[in-house]
Image 1 (spheres, one colour):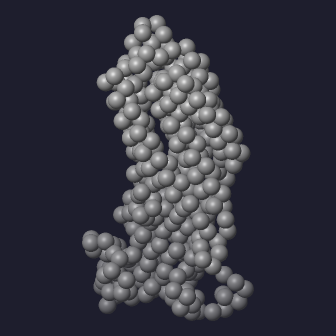
Image 2 (spheres, helix red, strand yellow; image 1 turned 60 degrees about the horizontal axis):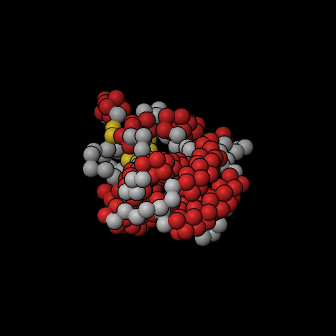
Image 3 (tube, one colour; image 1 turned 135 degrees about the vertical axis):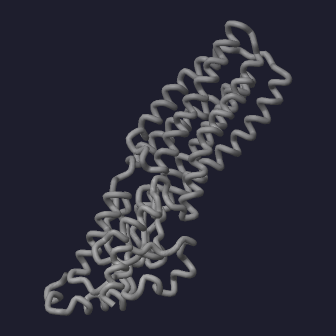
Length: 341
């Protein structure tokens, strides 16, 4: 509290909080994401490899190389989108964007997933056509090109290995691993064709790559959509958050509890706390609430509104925004009020 606040009555302090509408306590996660140079280096390496793979694939007529080049090309674009999203997320708040742009990386992750879905659809069509009509092709160029690709794909994945707790960086990491698996499949196909002459292996491996990529991308797609529609982050139980706030000293009930992802690394929450009576140190109550939310649920941005009144008759927001179950009321608090009546 500011100097001089101790001379005022506790209920005056709460009243000022009610006039402002909300009491805030913020603890942001400022963990630095993977350095931008990792994205830049990954983009350069993969672009060079895509050109090499596409040219050789077209010259020798390998649908495996062409499909893998298309897969890698989509990942180059996804890296560009992820890098751009990461840079946008660092922009400070403004009058138009009061939080800044922390969700820009989520859009990048969603774009990555949609791009891969489209690329794999095209690859599936061409692979199915080639599987019905296998065509002879030289195998050694496939082996040489994909050997280079393994170093590029897995080397790029290592650049993002340390930042996988960020959805945007994890998307890039998964894409690079998928590229490595895809390239490994084409390399094996080249060896099989070289030693057996089974040309149908080339499109068959392409279809197997499609299944692998779709499986690895689906989780990123669904998580990106959940974050964009403000779903409660996975691993956080909304009822547990409500119970944690209800257990605070002096709190009779809690309503309008909301938890949502503020970014790929930050979680926000808001709630209304109904107090039994004026508290001596309202700021201490709010600090305690934010500490519990941070330690138990990793919620780093909490906005809490303090109210007085009967738990059964909270503010008007309850009917529009609360869950269907009854408002949580501590039994011992209700009993103490009844006995004192």
